[in-house]
Image 1 (cartoon, rainbow, N blue to C red):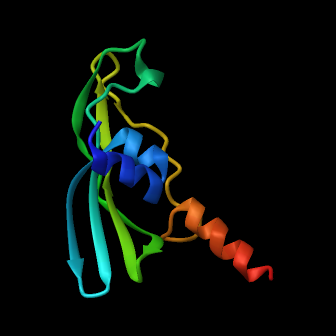
Image 2 (image 1 turned 90 degrees about the horizontal axis):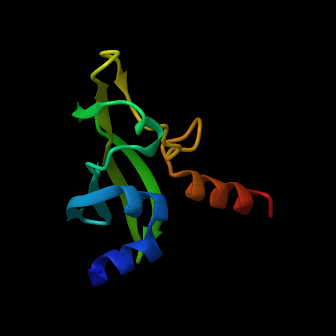
Length: 117
């Protein structure tokens, strides 16, 4: 396995590294932008149906834990899948964003816990 993947598993949510490919990164001053696309693996929940990749949803941007003093923004593109039998567009149900925020669920829980002290 690539050493940068091992490093990313430490810094980012494992779900993100397992199911998405890092497609790019850039640093703008004190901000780090990481770009991800969902891998082309057929979702298990649709294994009983004949589905094909059908493009991407609109990219979402969420904020994650700061790294070495830099704000971190994750730019994530999720795949759409077409069920060839029913002609319905389907997708995995990802719970990457904490409800009511633009942050990862882990980062939102961390901030919520800080506010309790």
